[in-house]
Figure (cartoon, helix red, strand yellow):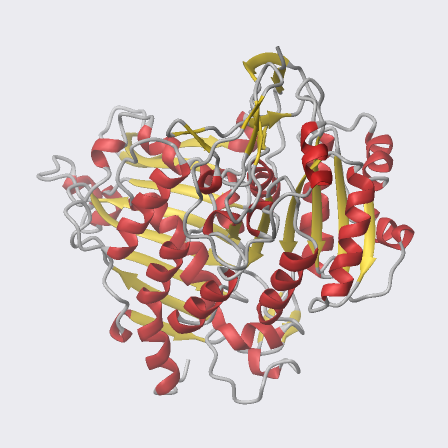
Length: 570
């Protein structure tokens, strides 16, 4: 009997079936098997059942059982669109004799699955600074499967050696794990290859497909495409990958970077276009803030600590502040920013996602859909943002540390007289029983005094506080506050009142502090590492669903149109 393996890096499961919505049905039950890769300490788990879905006119599904027998269920798959090549790797016609032989030769007793990761836009800053380093970190930790290949794809002419040289300049090893660093880098770079092509060329993607197959070596191919490209060419790239470079008998998934449109209309159009070629569960809309350690810890802090959950409501919380600040301006990169502004760039996605996680009700389980369902409920319960609840600003020329920095409109890449906000503050409200009347205050800006991202939960005053006279008229001094510092220097601390030692009655505010660097010796992984690993494993909990995106844009689109229509001066 075949046995699968799991590892200590995480519960690493790689699905041979492309998606649950297209799992073959046997006797009314869905059979979805995940293939586990052993890269750390292996342990025996469940017996294997491996299945391959094929597109059909009469829909033939071949299921390989434990004893090698072949079962052919006849349950049809409903609602297939005409664009299924990329959708979960389904073939565009009934299986040929050669394809049947390939499937029949699959041996469940051997690890024959591989993951091919293609970074589309590999020559860009995001790929160089974040994606390739995150993939190397996963490899360094033993979190990638035994068989994997990484391809860079971009319009720039480049050889494999030139790509490896470019990537090698950004790779670093864990601070707490320096051993064999150079050796690991060399091994990783040998798995990296490059193919030059146009994003809208089916022929170029077909050439990529040929190269991928050479490296996959006849194994079951699972393919992940990371679209690190401008949104105006998303659809061209997806369409060409759909017709020319999707997986034949494994899964195909696509990671899409923000921005997901500029408003409700453009976002809906983008989603509609993507769904011509992809199922919803193949689209992984990434918001890297959801992969940050302290954001990931939000639900743990709340739902696993009895002292917090009873306080998480309007009865005890006076306001919640979501703060994002950068200590630098556009600095020559104003072209992109001026088209979006701080509200679209930070508030509508990063801060709103944190708000939804913070305010959601207890989900039924930790399953991705249960969590995302609760987030959507929060967003749909919120009032659309009103202009009177918003303040916008724009940074001017300033001096810091003896250095003079130009104003936003002095940047050569910013249009003269631009009214795009670089700072915004807004008050949002959730009209439900838990949060009625509690303001959620968002603040985000560039070129501010420091760089930080934090959540500040300010609690109400103690009714009839016996020690009011010790605080004088400043009652805020007596208010407890929970602070979650997302970055930098991650920490969670609670401000409390206590008596200063001595014979008198003097009160002081102190912090009960969990400082991550002091408490944990292990380096905190970058957000992209967690999200890339989740995408490979098919874990969607930290990715944004289309209805969630629709609800988010519905909150901000009216006020954005009003700001731009009335030409509000920051």
